[in-house]
Picture 1 (cartoon, protein in one colour):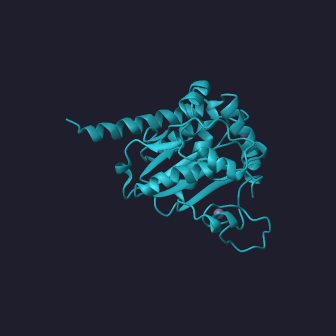
Picture 2 (cartoon, rainbow, N blue to C red):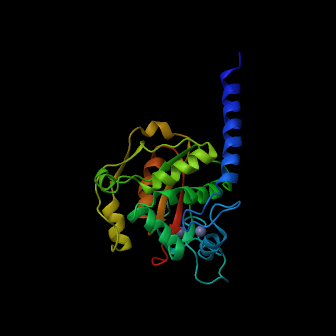
Picture 3 (cartoon, rainbow, N blue to C red):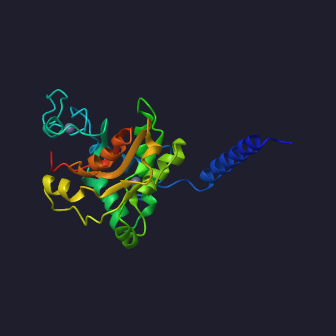
Length: 252
Ligand SMILES: [Zn+2]
Ligand SMILES: [Zn+2]
């Protein structure tokens, strides 16, 4: 009799053969523009548009804030120098503008949930480059009120894609949003930090002792949310990393 793991392997093989056959018959299309995709996550055109916003060049080694002058050597930014972050490092892939902003707006405000897959796969590519793979992926939660209105949390959707594609556990219940902070749009850096204070809690802090936690969110604006969440994990004894698809440029 075949052992359960052999059966599972066989099922996986059959699934991948079926998947390959399916993609020959129905070529995958770019979820942003419906163009055919060959080997990439997005079509060539969208990929090029995303690459225009890619954060490269000198940046803060802690929060990845990009420096305007490309001649500057990487150094700790003013914010991180004044307030040491509770996370080991927070990384963002793109500037929050152009087609990256369009894709995230589609996902958040127009319910285009199908774009969560390519966006999650782009995040996965970055996770693969991390020195130490995370033990657990934690999406930044929305408050229940906001969740009810939107019916999904964009960060959970993207984090689930990362978890599935990299076989890293997803934990979307351990970090809870216990206070409704309302929208942070339009608030200053100081107001955001004050507004978000005490908004999160861990269901069971003991679970994270000694763990490498990766927090996933859609946009890093001032870092107030990421800092607030990371503070809890740090206090629980975890090494916390942050990863967002985009980074707002207006606060830099
Ligand atoms: Zn496209
Ligand atoms: Zn910094």
